Length: 308
Image (spheres, one colour):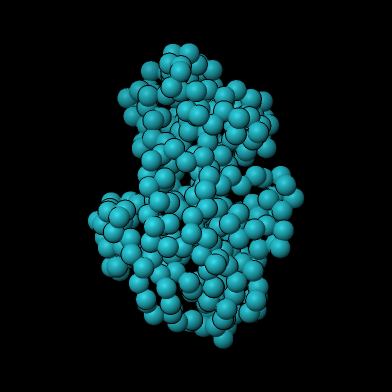
């Protein structure tokens, strides 16, 4: 089968098309003919050797996948050939940038016909991270609170602002050029961080800071005394929080199929918008351009590879 692979520590230009063996289907697995796969920043971290694990080289990246069931293991009972499905699987497994991938049944979810393959593939890590930021135990966004989202127009950010609004929060979010997008997602106040001194202009404006881009330490002044701050990115410096009694934490998302089912149902109903910046073809050049956009840090929402 066709795959787009790259060696560990390879440059973006080193993604190449390669013929690889079609994956075997174990007893508890579902073989998916891949239709779409979305790009995540963790893919680049894996490629650059910055994660505590390594994929077999040459690596097939990609874990947020949608497609059609092509085969099932002997113990699989909930899926049949032809079912439209999506999945977000372990990042240390990869496999998405290929024509077929084999995934354990418990991680596979049926896709409603109304939701496109591209939309389904763009949930996964980004939506899970956003939801778990907004709903983390002892940090949950409360109705009527003001939440400041740093990086509101990115992959995680576009979901974060929506989940915060669903909780009844007043949402302030930063962007450099996607003001209209954030307004369309319900953001109450859009901040162009290139035009304003954010920490100074918005000091003590927010009950909670959610930093999706790794600038939480710099943006911490927006949080009121006794407030809280969360990030999935670079940890927020503790020495900046003590004098104002701000509670901080860094989260690493966890795979949760119940949450993914909830998201896909919301998308089907129109209650959750999937923002896709661009869909690239399943070619060497397409994958290279997708990762160039991802690593630029300026994508609005998610980036997707259309495999079929």
